[in-house]
Length: 497
Length: 119
Image 1 (spheres, one colour):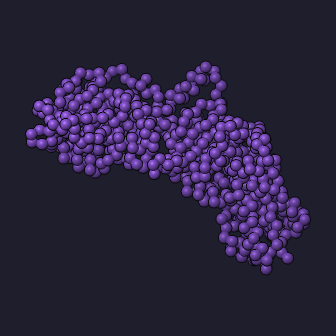
Image 2: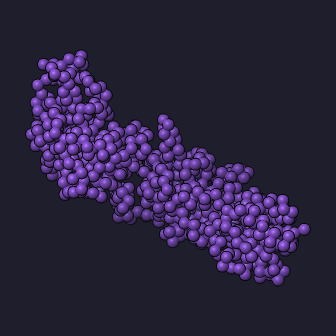
Image 3: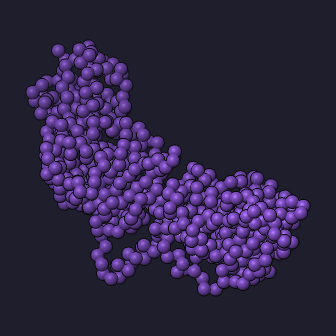
């Protein structure tokens, strides 16, 4: 099942509302591209015309061919015409590395023809005639015209470009054919091409630091809504995959929250009496602390309470599954047995190789497929590193956590903070309460014998808690807490008695 | 002088073939579509036609059928060059003396042309 589609049901609900209100819904042409139809709130409008623009290498040819091959799989017929000089054979060679390409359909349901020669020798009027005849002859229901920039250079004035586009649109619309113009030029909103067509998709690739990020943006969509703004995408062997920004697709999760809450064991028996009996079901707990304080250990204890009926998931960015199993074993926790019983799943992700929306969707997909009820996310900071745009992580995490809450999942997440020793603690992000229900801080304290780990409960939503400072002990019995004998270090680095 | 007609909507392919054949001493004429090719056939009398399959207006098989249907041109040998549809050409030995897959090897095409023309 396609999760993006599933998650955007609120958008479709909005469409249902429109239907009930007798608003006219236009017939859609689905791109078949994961995420793109959701971005376009159901797909392209059939019979309309679109510009797909982007610099060479931005993926527009792949996008157009994916639309084309998906269309013929749905019984349609496609005419792919080019105004460029490059032969189609080279296109076929690189398309043959993509799973959607079906060589046997070429020349049958999908025709590739060149109008370059006609444009050069006979002019744009003849190109229109040639394409009009071809649409009729091939009974095409989709026309893709590559190289619109060449038509612009060939046209003597912008009026001629406009006429070329409008004539083609006219003929195509008459034949019930949806048109996609591809161009590598950066057309702006006021360009004659943009004013003529019904929709504009812009594709681009930009550098964020040394990382290259592909983005797609619906700049104009007549006859349909679209999720505004830029969305990250990637090109895989299956073609283009679009990840609509999670916070723009999952917007109403909170409405599905349960009204009844029970308390579940946190995995640390000595902590539960101090926080009202345990963690509130489908709450989000954030463990803050510098490296080495035992955040992951806390999370492993939390996951150890997973059962086959209420399985747990470790979604981590740092330690490999092998090392986590060893670490758990040292705490007396048999993760391998839990995994064999179907009570525990471990997913390791690279924080530098993936798109953040993809990571979030992967997490939600595992939660859905395995019926996960406990998630340990190690760490939120690692996941944030995957985001090319740091300004949106708070919105994204809010959406993700709301969705997990709505699915009845109890989440424990870690977030490493700077300052190994000392009393000054900075929140890793502003407005944390939109993300988390409970805040737990673990830091280093000092006893006469040396450093100790100390846990403070900063916030527990909807439950009374003991604000006492707690010593953390990690041993073969896992992680336990008890009221502290010494206080945490203050800013001067001195323990206060 | 032996004249060869090359029919391809992709002018680059038509050009590459045309230059290679001219280097071998043949005269070449190119046409960007089947209709244009039929017009040229009226004027020129090529000894060989090399055609693409997927073209606007008329595909390679339709062109070959039109060529065969005419008494004047019916005997001219034809070669089909095609990416995905070479099997369609192979199934019609009545139309094509030889079928090449695209991308083709220019040496093999030249060899076939020499054999077909007996030059």
